[in-house]
Image (cartoon, rainbow, N blue to C red):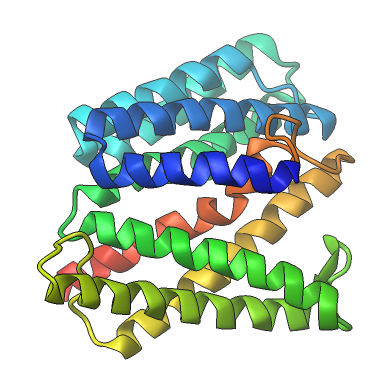
Length: 274
């Protein structure tokens, strides 16, 4: 019940923010989520034996969102500067044998957590970006739900028992099917609304394009889920935190999106280029 109530409260807020929120508000919300999730990541990193300096990572995360809002073309150069900043901070704080590992763990946190959450609001600024981001969320959420229920019902063959014992190949297949159905569902919903003069969702490409994109995003989401499980296993933790009742930590809820968002971003850039 806690899990359901949390979802019932948060999902409408996310949808309203994406559909009607200005870019600055989307960036602000994404930054808050990034800082909270980054804190959970740093706790896991410490439990794995790292000693990442928190304040430099937190400040770099905030500056990354500032750069994204005011001059998004400089995102990658900014990340390069932040890598040097973290290396310098660790050279002053960490022991010499830990300096490189601590700096690498901190920089990976920016790449793993902050960078995808920076890209999410930027997607809404692209052509039909709001529709694309909603497509992503629906595909990932539906895949996650189907994986859970199919895996529990008919799952027999472990998928990655070393990382996540409860994940099965049957659940993974159900997840792909759920993402395809949900993705096509929102595409057809957009077409139906458009016929009634409601310009809320717009998907111009044919159905097979959205089917392929749904599969690609689902695979990315499932890999993202497994990567976060690997980080937790390495830290000896069951959940990344306790922030969301019934869901564990914030990182536990966005792990699939952390890989799916960059995949959608670069798929969008590739489509625009060709």
